[in-house]
Length: 127
Picture 1 (cartoon, rainbow, N blue to C red):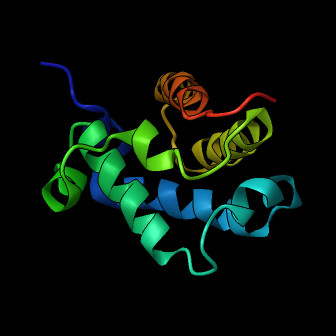
Picture 2: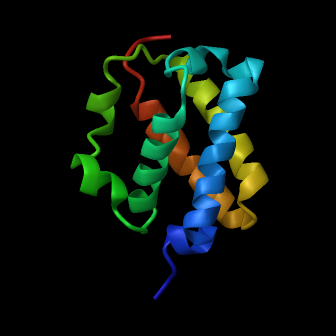
């Protein structure tokens, strides 16, 4: 039986490293200023929610669902104005975090494609 994404990435520690690097980039890179502005000043809860979501999404413990129920990603993002610029900034951060934290090249490509689809699905306005 093939390993889950969660196992292939290296479990909780490596998944947390990905999420932390993602938010570190969002918090510090000028290229991410637009997407950063949509987040609270303190990113602790955002970090946790993404980690919990990705844990279950990747085949690990379903921490997000245990706490909040079904993710309903699009509905939960509707209060935020998300267009192409915000999508692209989110992906910029995620792709760099993937490059820095995921050693398996094929997994990195697969995750990049999956995240691109998810990020595009979150758009709720033109442009």
